Length: 574
Image 1 (cartoon, rainbow, N blue to C red):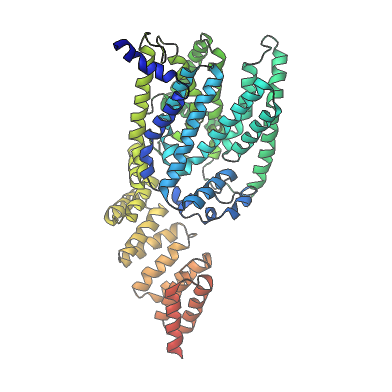
Image 2: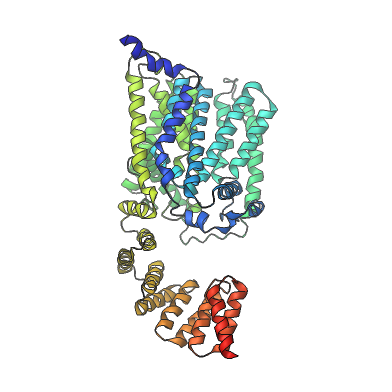
């Protein structure tokens, strides 16, 4: 009886479909808490305040411009529009859709691994470790990061279709594979590495292993269609982004990029192997000179890992699969090494590890399968299942703990400041989040901390002035808004807020001038003409005030206060 009870779990796992259902269920359970999260961070720009996602009419434009997301990702834009059409601004449903994508990808990792090794236990290990890997928290808990999930799902589907084509040589499967790859490109540009991945796979698994030239020819032939699609995509993307100007002030040189690569790759290795303290924000910076800590040590460690990995994979039963998994990791990381395409000093993120981690979990699964024991055969050593269970439990615990900061903006920025405590941007963002929750005193203190360190930090001058204006401290509001204007005079809102602060202090000439400056920079903005009209009315310029109220209603007929003021002035004039 006792032996049969011990044998029951392995026998249960061996039943058809059990592993697939189990890994999907565990993955979904691990991220169930994200369904209570709201919109945070860039969600407010890409979703909440993005009028372009509120209609499918804007989607066709996304295929030939950077409409909707300000990037050339038209199918990601379609995903956003579809979510809005189905769920509106109910974040729980957006999170559910994102979680469903992650569960689907977890299942696809299982299927891909099985197709490579034809062993369900190896596939189960890889799939479950992928599903609960803590480095994926950013991708799953933050709905604006859905582009990585969409791309990964489409690329895994494309790869499975390509495997089907190789097995049966059906042109339909190849066409499906190419179409899915093209779709992946339209979700995120980092999918550009996939044709090279197909080339490497075709080389490693070529039938003519002794004839180099024939292997090369077959590999090029197998990947040619993918490279063709890539060429068309690059031309379309170049056309769509023809008017996009790179506004980044600090563009690193090639020397700086190359010197920074070891630090980036070592960061990625650490977060794949030991993802214990995660954040949206990290303090990694450009490396301008090859120092010991920033260049020599990480480069030496990476070389040691690479050499050890090559030697280890040669001893495996599935040596070609292990080599392909290693190539998957490296190739999927290549796009994020082009630092000119990323925000300066903000170029490492855990979300960039989503696709590379597919290769990583396959390698880990192959390593675990080398240990004594079996997941499905009772009576053998328990080492293999014990190691797997420990890793899976560690992944679940890590995922539970690391997803908590994504529950709100305040928690996200507070967690980020643990990693980058001197960041003016983070402190300003945290102050904004606190202000939005009515915690004005804490917000003001943080703005002041930023300005003590950097008095010319425009955003905190502007935000502090706005916060004082809301609190009725008009003199203080005028002081900081005036400073903001002196630092950077391009923003229109700061002028209208400055005009309001001066109006409340009866500085009507100055208020009129700043109201006019605001309108000159943004004549269609809601409320601008109304506020200037109120200032002009207080100054005794009724005719001009009437003109401003009329203009406000012409631009924004829903503005009831403007309509009421116009009626009062017209009535008193008559």
